Image (cartoon, rainbow, N blue to C red; front, side):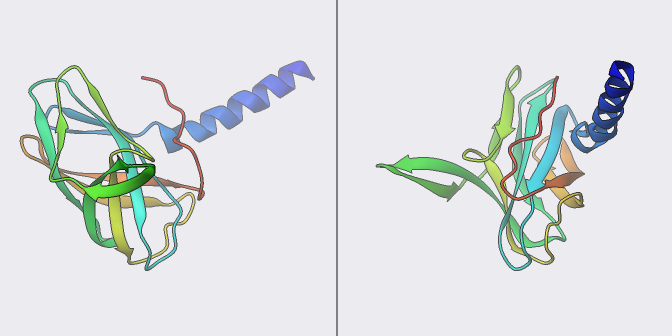
Amino acid sequence: MFARRQFLTAAITLAALPAFAHSYTAGEVEIGHPWSRAAPAGRTGAGYMTLRTTGAADRLLSASSPAAERVELHTHIHEGAVMRMRPVTDIPVTPGETVELKPGGLHLMLVNLTAALQPGARVPITLHFERGGDVTVELAVERAGAAAPAHAH
């Protein structure tokens, strides 16, 4: 019984790995674990991921997606006791540091979604880097309210 339970646990864990273990590169920038939360069509969605350069500094200048009217780079800032979102002109990627796009921090804002983001779906988004050029990644859509997928580096 114990061996069977271990086997089932391992099988379920391995089956889930492809949903979380996707990564991409743009020049010397590594893009890890892009994901989003479920959201209805016509509303806003958000994209999250990690960015790390293995070489020279780079900057994420913009992004675009057929899933949204436009994609904006955003951050959250404290204004008094209130957190507010603000657009940013770019997101620097500094050598030796990992930039985390996450809920409550830097993120991609998908404005006016053209279709609902459904759990389990993959949403294409093209990232435009100053040095690394353009790379299209897929956001793995998680259920609404989901925390960042767990992953190891």
